[in-house]
Image 1 (cartoon, rainbow over the protein chains, first blue to last red):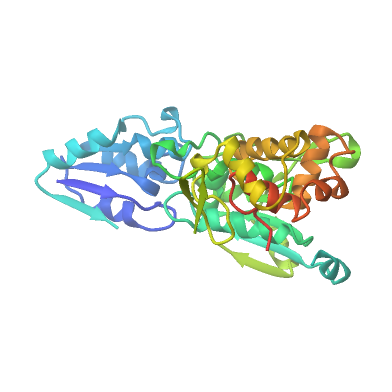
Image 2 (image 1 turned 120 degrees about the horizontal axis):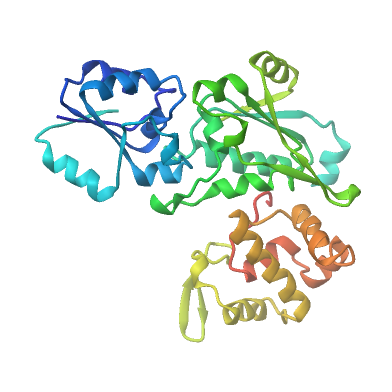
Length: 100
Length: 141
Length: 110
């Protein structure tokens, strides 16, 4: 299953719920303000690290660029995808859960 | 219009910005309203806390998401005579950011050969309490 | 509202400011000024071009006070004062010059 988070983890608990309720082997994609959750050295680091142990985590490149986030500022292990990659992820998974 | 306001009492306005810049349009609207307020010769200060600190992040480039890159507009705050921009240290730290991640905003001292002075003050939560408490008018975005 | 120039029409807001920044051309600026009974001289163009550069850099049309200060810095105090600028643009330097520059109405003007 593909889980999508589009809200800032510092304003809403969407990322937290997603981390708690997504199964091992699933994919997590951070888009829009959700990409702030990928910042290394932030309070969300541990949550992302635990996701990365058994799930793949992606961020949308267009959204990190808009927000001035460099690739070096992302938690190691997170992959950057572009819009085409976003589409590919949604086709590859039969189900999508959006944590609004 | 400004004569009337100039002769009146100048109030201390504090614009409190707590939202990330691109997911909603609060940030852009907040900046615009603050600039309009500043054009009326009031004492205007800006406070950035919680996700609001992301508004001042360096290197924002919105051509990828097709919206207006209003992050360039923060650099006119000094031109509009906003001389104080406060950023809460605790908000920066829990987001993995430090002062170096913020745009270096300045104002130019017209009477001192356009000398550039820094606008941004990184303050503790305790100092921010004081700043909020001392303001006459609080406007939230 | 629309503005008709040389058989072409351009979309504007209710006060005559261009709706699309990309529609702007020097000819359009001249034509808008003509409609206000104003001939654009070199001195007018200096301000109009300054505003276009300012917008390009800061994504905002400056209020008159801010414009006056910025012109003073760039072109000297003899041009960075409201008397000089109001002589060039009697309807208000920021408002009128922004219109000819194809920018939105300045932030901080009513």
